[in-house]
Length: 258
Image (cartoon, rainbow, N blue to C red):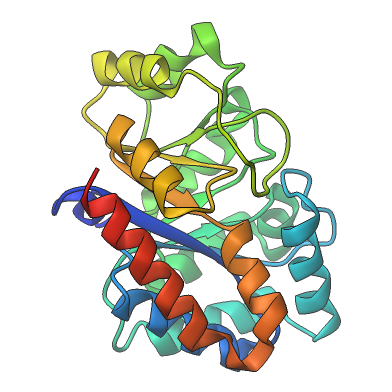
């Protein structure tokens, strides 16, 4: 079983997203440990990129701050290697094709394997073009996580059939960010996914409150939260880890009740 699948073994999963290096890598390291201690089942780690097209202003700001602080892909790998010594839950990178290409795709996948990264999400790579990454990822035991958007419609079954690790269901059109309500028919998307694969699926984009996380986890296998956590980091900076711990604990408690 893929290590990522193990995140969904004990009921509904809560998956936080953290931009590496915002406000600095030392704080990121503490936040990762705090998230794991608070009950996160899998952590998405963002490798900063200058043009994160899927992100709203909150996560774009985190990318800008991290890059301004001198964060590089190599430094992110070194960070992961350090926390891997004591944090055992799965890690998934969320970044962009250009980051992987400029690092060299095979070298990138090899480093993921060496440092203990279990999967990768590339939101700017269309499903039809993922093979240039998938073959090398598979060679190094890295799951390529596919996204299903509200506009995927007749492609949902095809994406589900080829899924690895878990499926990331995008709850809303547009970029990441906090939303007051989620109106997409998540239940119908999950139904099609279930008909085509037994790989778990989690819902992200727009979730910020415990009741939203609970509602989305009730329809799927878990909830993903990014912007709300980045806002805590933006507000508290180096003092954020304790606040992130409290937030994730509340969200995980809500997801457990789904």
